[in-house]
Length: 112
Image 1 (spheres, rainbow, N blue to C red):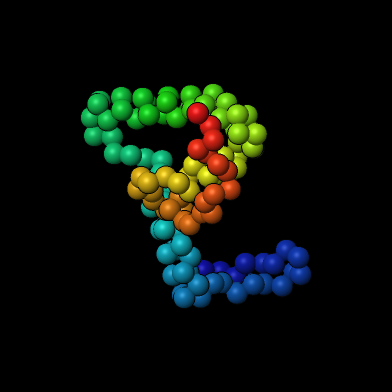
Image 2: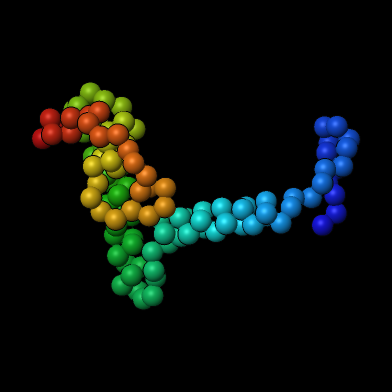
């Protein structure tokens, strides 16, 4: 790998070392897996595609209507309500979606 010219100082920057490259490769591999697990469910047959289409339609309807109505009813921002719902979710989540989230900032039970 040739040295890359640093445009700010005009000095040549040394190429990344093996350890730095290995770390970056590992980071990118994790991001790839996270993205694939969130965005690309297995599509092995027509039924899989139909199921994904149905789930996406329902999810978009919730985001466009259900979440808006619930947030108005609870008098909170949609984003705050959405984060609360993610935190309370019991389904398996992959990648960054599985990180810990604070619970109890929105009293979801007050909305019926």
